[in-house]
Length: 269
Image (cartoon, rainbow, N blue to C red; front, side, top):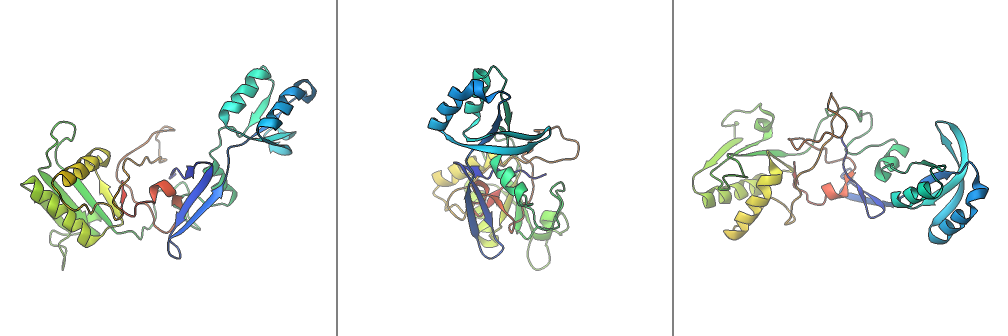
């Protein structure tokens, strides 16, 4: 399952490229349901909540059947205070539901997925042009960039050859750091990939950007002058819940994705 953060300041932000770049922002403020077994004993609390937050009487379905209560537009901290004040007699629902996931589930869609695709499968066709970068060495110990290997097109999928037919699909840059960075930026500019797959990108890319700035080189890693790194991916297949990976992955460009991960057209993974 692909999980991307697409909730920001009380709204769900989605981007799609089906008919050009389309941005959708839908207000989805935090909320939860409250059921009180004995509402009369907590009338004062309900009146206080009404004066502070948007509160509506509601009938809602739970795994225990239909309940009568309230829909309260407030965050988790308010729910916790209700629990304490009612001495944990209150029954709270949907306190920890992610609003972006709720919005998508209600419409039978999911981030980076399209019609007839399974949300539990990481296998899909990607229309993106990808380029893979591998920096030699350990950025935590040796911070000098002495070698970079690049692959794109069929070679990125490990199907290409050294010369790649008419265009060279595999390149290795070695030697002087300034020359390496200059050639790297030029190759990125020429091939203009939609996705950069970078091993340990959360460490290498800030270092690369700082070095390019210090050397006075024009930076082409991002089309917009900035970049996002360290995207976390949650995948099925035996990993424990909450396990995250910063390894390579490709995201479809034509499906709804979180705004934070689509702001810069060059997506770093």
